[in-house]
Length: 330
Image (tube, rainbow, N blue to C red; front, side):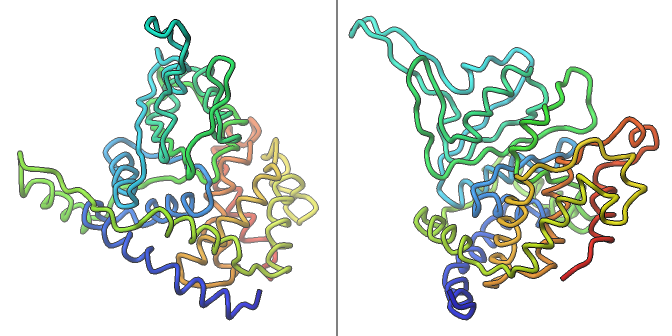
């Protein structure tokens, strides 16, 4: 398809993004990067992991976006005593009908918030794997399709590590983006304080529905058509391959720090996230700046470091940023 035609399509379908951002802004102050990354997940069907200290409106942001989109929303508070059945559901016996029936769990929603996902043991975390990858769950002997769209937004606290279970690499890899949520600016915090104390005891601010589901699904199709040049595709593959073989890209010093590089999912997700980022910028084509904007969030949780890197306090984010500084931009 011609780039001009795609541009016109994008201009037509991205109007809802501005309406959505305005409505979310009535409840959420600042945190534009977090809101944008969640929108990228919605536009591409990619799951998002939000990492930040408590009180940064992670849960409120996801709930507000669900309200503005009119999507079914469910929240699961992950705790050490949680069971897989508490998430996906279970089979119960109906005495009146003398048969077993499936009682569906909170996973059957468009937007599922897995709050403090690293507080639940491995068997519960793994219960999410089938749903995140296959968009289906098995209850008893029956497989049930999950609604479309279906998105898992997980949060984790990076500070309190006591009583937590680190997510296994297989599950981390299923998240398209890992977003580090930071503190608000001084100006934003003043607005937050004034807004939240102006009506104590009254109703909390809530977003109204401003987008219909068909609009979102049409926008998804447009994102899939956004033009991405051959050179930019090669740039994506070079970045991902550099995490596996840094020496081949003139990064000998990183070879001792990287134990495992990013999987092929990184290339797929980087391509999709860059297209969605271009869509949010009202463009019908991807630029290297789109790749750089989303690259760290796509790659930071896919690069596994050696003990040597940990001993020298080198983070995966530092390694990824070094790749972007070194790999030649088309």
